[in-house]
Length: 132
Image (cartoon, rainbow, N blue to C red; front, side, top):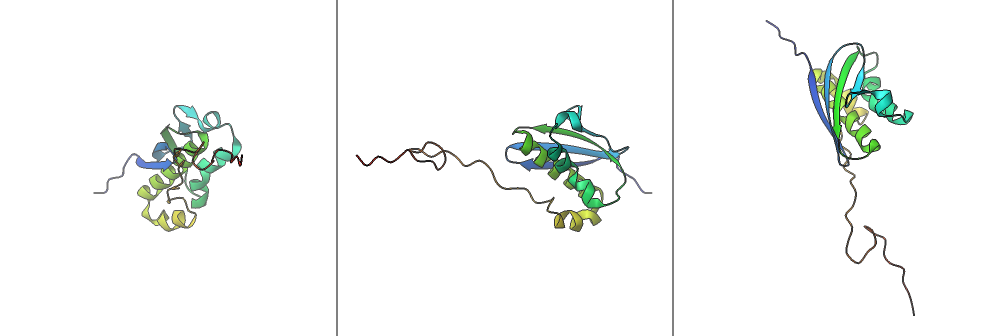
């Protein structure tokens, strides 16, 4: 007896944003925090970033994606969503792992904001030097 799951989960992170993607068979709708993708991300480059995992699959069947994302700004959230979708696709079909890995979609971007140090104005900016 074969059993098929109704949905597949993936968790993605970028900067301080965390996204949980729920992937299920469907018509290709992407819903982010209860809104369609085009409403959630009005910038076209971010919409393209979110859809990258599906483009890496090439001719993939359509999936509905429900995404809950928290924290960070819109760029960090889009990166977290991309990571979450890629991980959900890999949990659905393990044969996609090399494709996603080659496209760089499974690697979490480790860059985060550097902390401010005492005696400085920001993480690295020092006060102006005065000779006299």
